[in-house]
Picture 1 (cartoon, helix red, strand yellow):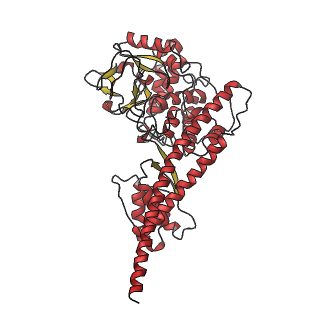
Picture 2: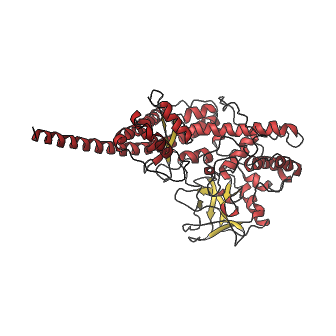
Picture 3: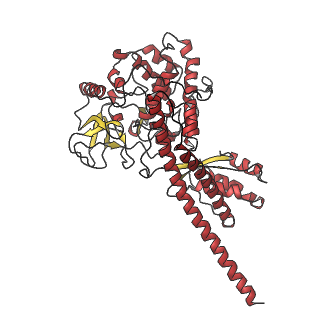
Length: 499
């Protein structure tokens, strides 16, 4: 999804927004940072472990509803959006999507949604006093827009956005709706589980902040029966999946009705932005489309795990060139130089336990640098800080450091970490075939089958990357060791020659 200036880290938000179709990425650990004296995030209790009944909000529609989508298109047209070459239809991928009505050329600009039909932090509130209170407290854009969405949704037809809100899903595709037991059960092998738990806790913590600091002091504007944790899960689910950052509008984050019906394709690179010449939100096609074909956009270069985290889907295996899997590494406390290495890492913003992304094409320089540090002997203590600096992605320039004398040990260290991950994935995938899905409620059974399939697809794709890394690492280690063996044989031959 997008990154939010004060709320999320910059990677959070790709060039544009989408919902299962929107964009999102790593999420920051606290939503309120603008005024730390006013807002100190309340760490909520961790995600509920109960297999609780999924609550839904009293607005929105089913994800495949076309009636609401048609009403949305009519309202947008009546409100100033020009005629479109696309229409909302049911599609195989995404349940609803924008489908070409006419031939669309490569390089053609589409949409032209005017800024007046876009929701931003500056949008006018139907309840002006509520908006003024939030702005007086300096609430950042993300929670501000989330609260705005709930406020407008609760007004039903009285809000100018009623047609848009009616077309939004009642329950967004989001890991925010997974219970803690479901996260533990289905994502036990993937590092995305930890990030999903962090994200849920961040949303709950943000709601607790708003409730304690603002809502409880202004109950006439923010009644609890409307502004509660269930409605905030819904609104943040919408933002994670649909919010977009518009580069040409100074990076402003926005919800763009109609545009957020576009589904994601890993093969597409085009994204939304504001076009100054037409004064509308557009995207430029990077391929041709025939009538009846679904038109796609990119939610950003995200791994399958990130797409599941924000949009609730996993692309088909092997179709995402940006896919990656995080590998966990750490410095053992038994290391003779544990304290020195820990201090070097801390100086560069790292800890003794880190995660690094591995792609099908290889692993980052930072992981290799961390591995050097992890295996380096006491005699190399003068290089500890250089290794730690190279392992940090906080530096502007990436430094490729080499230590031939410990390269074999470093590669073996990475291989061991990859094989540990492979073991976890294999164990989960083997057990998934026998996973107990015995429930009496048919809807709950369908839900569990759906979640299980998502987890299996994710773990299969992530294990595939680790298998590739394992193959490359074993080959490099074999070449190093065979070279050492040849050198040793040559040395022994020369020694025998001079006996």
